[in-house]
Structure formats: C-alpha cells, structure tokens
Amino acid sequence: MFEKNRNEVIAIIPARSGSKGIKDKNIADVCGFPLIAYSIMAARMCIEIDRVIVSTDSENYADTARRYGAEVPFLRPEEISGSTAQDIEYLCHALRYLGETEGKVPEYLVLLRPTTPIRDVKLIEQAIEVIKENETASAVVSVHDALECPYKWMKIGKEGYLESPFQEMKPDDVNLPRQSFSKLFIPDGYVDVLRAETILEGKCVYGDKALPFYGYQEVVDIDSIEDMEKVIRSDIYDSEIYKELCRQKSVGVSRDNLNVTIEKKAKSFAGTYESGTKH
Image 1: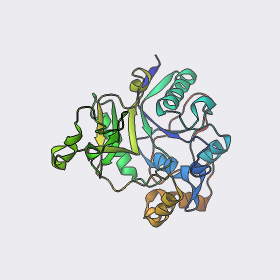
Image 2: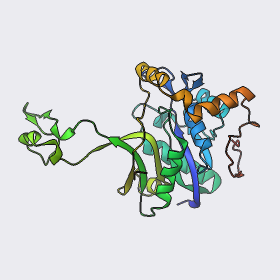
Image 3: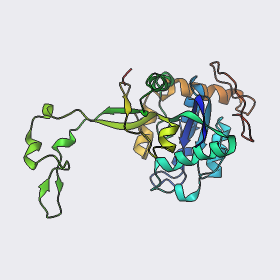
C-alpha cells in the first residue's frame, strides 16, 4: 500500500462528461462562469486544502478546470466515466494515480461535487476540522433532514400486495405516529471529507464510522434547468466564491495570477503537474 502524506488534504472534484439532463452540465454557464468553476474556487479558497484535482474524462472539461486553477493530471478512463460509474471507482483511480506517480497519497480527500455551486468556504474548513479531531471517524458526510418520513412509505411486493420497504416493519406499522420513528437524514453533496485508507483499504467511500455534518442553509443540487433558475434567483451573487471569481476575471485569470484573497502555504510537488457533526 502507498505511503500516506500525513495531514495532506486534497480536494477531488468529479466532472464526467455526457450528462443526460443538461448537455455538458458541469461546464454550463451559471451566472457568467462554468458550473465547475464554483467548486474549484471553493476548494482554492479553503485554507485547509492543499491541492485541487479534477477527475474528468473530457479534455474540454480539463482545459476549463485548469483555466480556473485546478490540476488535471490524468483523464479518467472511459470504463469508469459512464452514467453507472460509482464514486469509489474514480476515487480509487485518483488515489492510485497519485500513489504510483508521486509515491504517496494524501491522508484526506475532500469531495466537492460540481453540481453544488453555492457553498460557504468556512463550512468546508469546519468539516475538515471535524475529521481531524476525530481519529476514529472514517468520514464526515454532509446531510440534511429528510422532510418526509420514509417509514410511512409502502411498496408493491412481488405478489402485488402493499408492504413496507423496511424488512423489520409490518404494513400496519406505517400508521404509527411519526414521532415513534428514528430521525432520518439525506446525504446532499455539500461537502464530504474522506480518508484515503478507507477508500483504498476498506474499498468504500464513507466506511462504517461516518460522522454527520449538518445545520447549514438549503443545498441546491443542479440536475435540471429548473435547478439552474433556482441558483440564479438565490443569493449566489452575494457569495464570496462568486465575488472571487469576478475579481479574478477582472484582472485576468492566468497560471501566474491565481492567488485568492487569503494566505495559503505554497507547496511544491514532484512530477509534471501544473501548479495550480453539527457545527
């Protein structure tokens, strides 16, 4: 197994091409910038994150990502880039690439899905701090309250009769008071902080000791034109990420002019890479 670069934090932004809902969704224009630019900038503004890597199968997407300051040291293989590809596949691929080319892998990965453009950088930092302070945690996963109670749902069984989707429940259990059921949460993609060893050795993304991270504003996950419109109507223009994108656009974004407004410790890496719980 690869040597671990202790305390190193790398942001991974997955951006496969071939979206069916919105053509080239991950680089679609959102308020003047490609969608992926928001997640790249969020990672670059986070003082806890050392590097930002985009995992994509598209050279066009790669060029866009590099333009906004991310590293794209590889193109994701076609066999793990389709609509049925799972997170564990591209995460393992990225870590193995780093291990084989650099000899080390980071201790932590911060998974930022590009379909969530509105984020608070301070919350990303807090999520990273949570896992660093909890050595037994296998991951920190952002979630929000389930507005509906799935325990009151029913499905049609093989013989055509209604039954609970939960094996331990009888059909009549759906009539129990809502308060008698456990509170449920939905993972929302705002920010997930993962351990490389959980992915490489455990062959899973979250592991069995994932801590919840919640208590922030509503998450907008872009999957349709309606979601795009919702983002435009939101407070995205007031976000620090949008303002920083505008600032860099006004001075011209280049490889030599990608400093954000916060101080970050510069690091050099070997190889041919371009530099680039409730709170």
